[in-house]
Length: 336
Image (cartoon, rainbow, N blue to C red; front, side, top):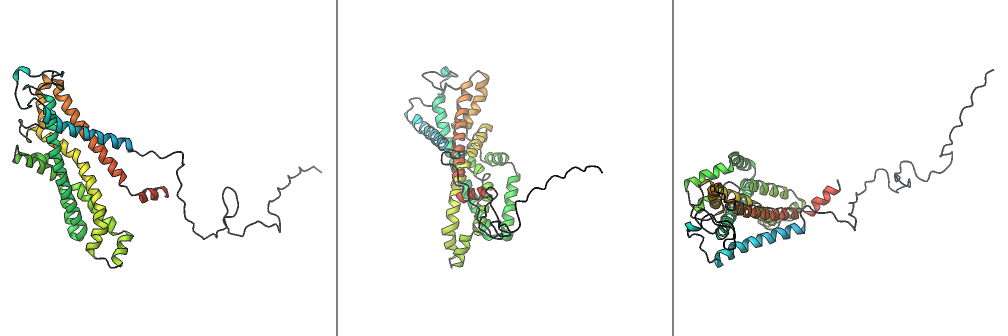
């Protein structure tokens, strides 16, 4: 009879008959230690928010250094616009054909243009006018957008649909084309430039304000105020308007760079301010002929001022928008 191989011995089960297991049937245990958690299987537990290490802090995309740099740049540009034209001993409007197209020097820091005008003083006056017109246009577009968005959110229904379709119709037309048409009807008038910018940049603000109000109306604290007997005026004054005002301020700051670019573009195309009025657009329009004669400074310095001003305002607006995000929204994203 052949010898059959011996079967391997069965592993002894960890659980023997009558041996206590240390936990009841269905009781959850910890995945790492294996110890019972002391909770029933159907009991719901709160998810704890993981805390950041104390030694390391999450780096914000827009830090304090960026805000300080943007504010310092804006203050420097404001002082340049206000102080230089006031203390300059040279009138930028006086034509001096003998000193035309001079390169930057100690006498003329930014050189002169084709008419012999000092470009350092003329650029300061141009930046001041461009910033003033852009600020007025940004305020007008923000006020118009807040009014339209609030009107659509308050009435709702077919009024909301009609207003939103009107917003889509305005967005369907290119803003620059519509601005050129409005500015061409009253060429050379500063209020036409402001109107062309203000009437074309309010649509996005209206959408933001409408969505913000609609989201706030469904919040629990607003429902609690209504149930407790608060009137509609009290709800608006206590909960809705204070939430819309920061959004409006951020919209003014974020609209300002677009307004500066549009004003400069309209003046550059010849439908904005007249050539004798200094603005960044008219100065850049004069640089088209000067650059062909080797006057690179006529294009370089005004374009640098325009770019730096827009980047500083946009950086400050981005910082304000990031700091306006509620903390509870960030915590909700962490707990997901």
